[in-house]
Image 1 (cartoon, rainbow, N blue to C red):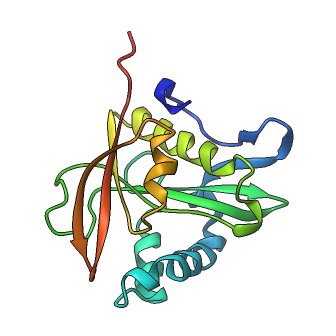
Image 2: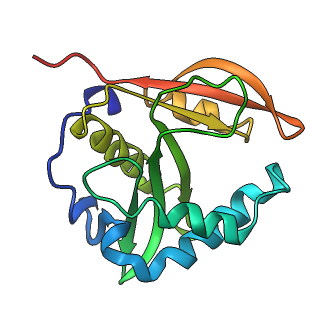
Length: 181
């Protein structure tokens, strides 16, 4: 479980599913040819919550996250040499009154045909590991989908607030790394 998330100095080729060694996780920085695919996923998933969000804006944002040793960064899950999921860490979100100077999980997406197979939970653990590796003991997220907070709660995330954003309410959540001696 993520409650026992520990630092992972090299996430390259970390197995997402031990039953299927063909599913790997890596930094998007090593697979920049997939930036447009990731931008299109982001647009298709979140445009309905923010009508000002465009593919171009998504693409520009993702290009800033092609890092491996600093935030912002993006991870990608890979199966059969194609991306199947993504998540990133960033330093800010556009939600007014959201906590400032925090690290945020963003653009967390799993391709529909790969959902409910454990990939999302492994991506969440991997991005958590990255935050801890980079010296951050807590991560925030905001969810526009009112059903998603229940999923995150299974992995030790807690609701800290609900705020208005682009005409709807978003849920602000936080994950804290456990103290490890």
